[in-house]
Image (cartoon, rainbow, N blue to C red; front, top):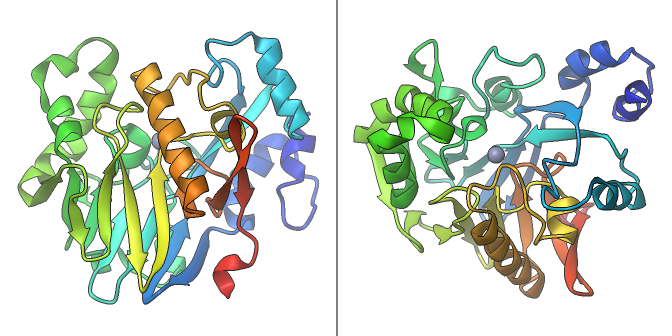
Length: 312
Ligand SMILES: [Zn+2]
């Protein structure tokens, strides 16, 4: 089943056994995707992915397994296996090179933490990144900040939400459910605090890029509005984390959401905005190239992947 599921993702249609397919895929699937947004150049970069059991109970944690499996199958997805991918975004405004999120901790999984390789393939070195924006402090977003104890992006300054930073910096996070996350935060983010600017809702990163409070997935999680010459992009980070489950059923509970109800309310608000304003969306966990539109569908929504819209 897994071989059949992953085989379809390989460019050549080769039939490798599942384990090899997973290990080889970073080399065989596209890893960077670039387009112009007004005078900005946007590149989405595939840090990697993991495959495992699911979507239930990670998605639809408060739902019967049958309901989740039924929705998966109705959308041509396997009922009991899933893939989660990680896509940081680079925006070259002409004045500054801005990277949103940094992928996973190097060396922990064979199929993730490829951000620097993808960056080089797209024509940028890590030393060219001027600003690193952290949408929130989860490990798959701050994991790539350091390599061997040194900053991965040696010339960068950093930007993140004040609420998010303060939450993770509090000593009480070092025990209980937040222990693992707070430990990584101390290793990767704390040493960079002196080079970090802290934003509130509507705060500006550089001209044309501003924060949108999207709390719930984590206490201070931020989305970002990007605009150049009247062209707009909504970078929603982890507002919705599965292109079917979180978009078609935004109220379903998600294991990764630290405040389930706040995350669901934020999801509805942001999905509604994306649909109403017909925005191009980049979502960190949407299938690569992690770009699409949101279409209204009855009481909820559908993810419409980009085709050639951004080439024109
Ligand atoms: Zn994430």
